[in-house]
Image (cartoon, rainbow, N blue to C red):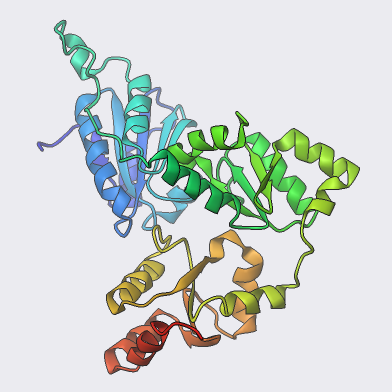
Length: 347
């Protein structure tokens, strides 16, 4: 593809300062991506193609981990993320690999699409035709939602993450749960449009946030407020285990247990990504825990096993170490025993 005048790949902080003018009425589309995240590959192509079709929007591609200050300024919690900015203010966001939604959002802010000059049959084709990702069958989606809603004693479906909620109702819910000292897990419905829409029918509830306790739907923010006020919500929630018990249970959850940033499907740091790839190459069956979702576990585990960084790898409840140690074990053949024993079914 030929050079596109309104498309910039940021190489330095000065590049960003040069191309982005906060006081400008121009709409800026910012693409936060990471080389280790497969969904970014397709979305980078879509982003560049959209730039070629919408000359009045400035498209800026930013490697999220390479520019942490910019990522923090725009509250980037996952990649890919697309932020639309005008006059220094965020006016829209698209989370995750969602080509149709990105195309629709670009079209909304493109006042004079490149194709509008044509009066022919293709005049409405302002954005590239991008096929949506394959969808699950109704049965598959139902099974996924059952698994999600039952994945934690208290499961909340919110816009954003606990550290970066993206709407006031999600923020209020998180504040209530924190004030009540209720431990919970969360799912960011902005990162998966299929789940977002399916949850409305699954719960028979049209809005978010949504709260599940022990796999059963409780309600939204207003219902939780009422239940907390009457003391009923606390009675619904299972008794909380102390931190040491929780850590020990997690460490022994599987013969090979890893504690990483993100999930095996979408690791959130380069080291976690490398570990997941290494274990896949070795054919190891393992379970994982996302330490970004629980700061108590994240901080407590460092002291509990006297190891300061993540990822961490445990084998039969014993700490093996981090990425460097496991890599060394693979190279000298010591890890072969872990692979062999991990494949043996428990008695």
